[in-house]
Image 1 (cartoon, helix red, strand yellow):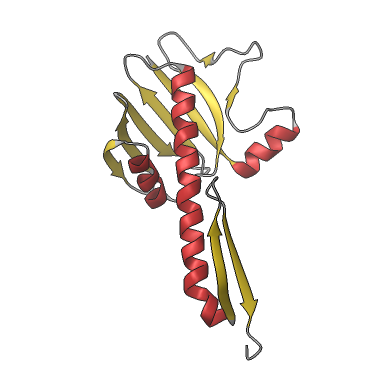
Image 2 (cartoon, rainbow, N blue to C red):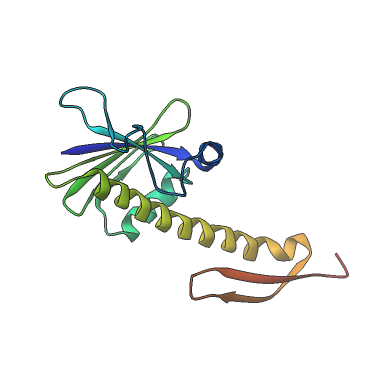
Length: 165
């Protein structure tokens, strides 16, 4: 079986949430709670909110969840994850579409895969932002006083403004 997931940018996902769509996770497009099938033999389509934009961070996140055979371009990403093939394509309007194909793929397993990938991606973004702050703090007139990481991987940085800045 195969499943196609449309990965909505968070801004669109927030607008959908205001319209009654639940928290981060699968947004099944059929009113009765089943995935939409656009025709016989086609894969169900599921809409999932995501924050994924950077294909390099996406490749790192895929490696982080154990993907193999990862191939990345700016508009297409393919990988093998848990005996399934994940193909992600960037549409003309900037929305990622993920197609998961494999013998035992279900809507639930495809959605869970994308949610795991999204969480791993978020960690990679956090690491990249923290590194940029560390690198730019001095030049922007700040001193990094302390940095702590909580058990949930939240990073807290305390910066002081230099008086000579």
